[in-house]
Image 1: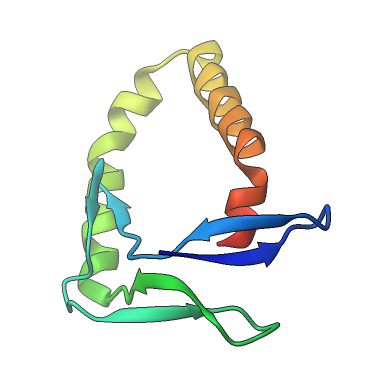
Image 2: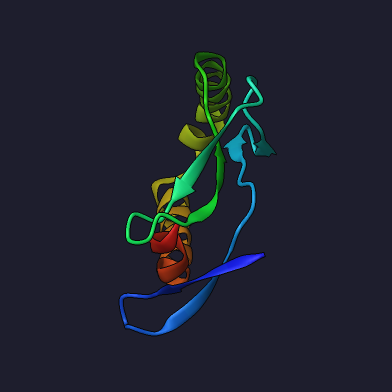
Length: 102
């Protein structure tokens, strides 16, 4: 299922609908609550998709995962960390229109 939207370059693009998950500790997970929030296009009020309604427990799990990952990250050289950040930036630029639609 998809909906059509105009991109910033004024072309019609297909946007997949569906449930998105949170990335916590390297895993895509739903909210502990099981509740979802509908993402609505403000231009025409059509549903774009659904995202988990994160809770305090979800936030605590994310913080715990980040704290566990931090020592390994800190042990990397500055150039290794910079390489990861550049790869992330490249991935964001590559999928920029898709990310903007979400």
